[in-house]
Length: 112
Image (cartoon, rainbow, N blue to C red):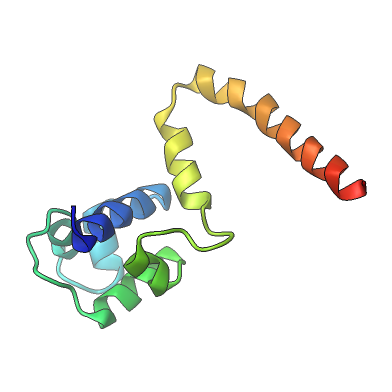
């Protein structure tokens, strides 16, 4: 998997986490309806930096994050949201107490 494959896969994760589908995101950035689909399916060789900037702006993430394919500090929320959304509701409910426990442990550690 090359960097463009990783960028395409990461773009898909972010757009889904933000509630877009490829067509709606393409239209929101003012492009043709198949732009994002073509990027994800790798039907386009290499989008311009202007295209990445527009996508990042609409998605509310830094362009550098889309281009590096890694969440920057504090912006991992879209990926976590996407992953949680893939779990059954009963599993999601099991995770909430675990997250609260992690938060409590973090707060206790700060107080020490």
